[in-house]
Image 1: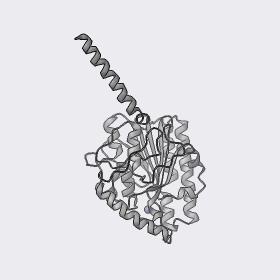
Image 2: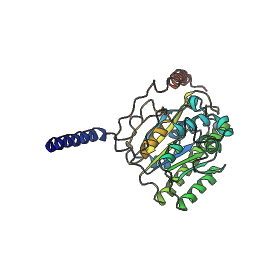
Image 3: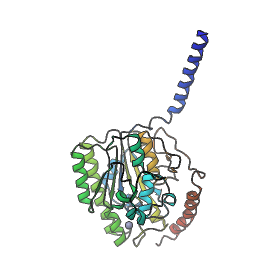
Image 4: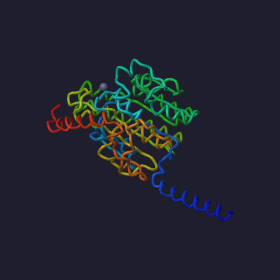
Length: 334
Ligand SMILES: [Zn+2]
């Protein structure tokens, strides 16, 4: 009887090791990071690649960069920062500029942000969000979960506040920034203007300051560092539509398990940052989150296929929008 029991135990041990080995292919990046930093550059779209951005280039020299990730098909900030931070289409979260600005968000909703998911797993963790457009802190990130929220309507001063926050010894597990002045330049002069490109160059300077301050304070080890745009701008300026100039966005990742030279797969969305962030911190993704891990992001994860059945409405709208978007690129006059 004892021998039989030993045999059963030994068999169970071998089986569990085999299962470990099988799952091991996907296990390294899961929970491999202590922190996720997301630096948002509002309105920068795909245009970072058209500008001399030495800081972006050095930060992501060993990283994965996609300049043509897809934004939400309502290319405004509310839907897109909302999707990036919840991993869910704005069609479900109802996060638009108006709601983000006027309806304070709490953590009891159906589609919480990744801040809430991190808070549930890590009650003591420092979480912080520094933004220029205060609607993100008001109506997208939940107000009842103890996130350090700072609103400053000047990108330079916002950057100084971030550096001071790091210098004070703060060590956030999840950290979000929204710079806004590229968007302002896009509105006033359009996405082909020198003013717009100069604004991207200045944002790159702020990015460099934030990155260097984090590095100086020992905050970059085991950190998944992300830069994202919410949407772009038309030629003449403005957004909200579905031209390629508005819907193509930059998404860039740097971290110890990020695929060097990775470009993400062609279906990557900016909302996928939510999935990658939870994965990096070792937090299971909720079933109602349509964001996924794109291929060519992490070295040890082959990527998850886009799932039509997970969100048929979003998939249908996105496919229809893509056809129209492709036509706008053929007649690239807007
Ligand atoms: Zn705008």
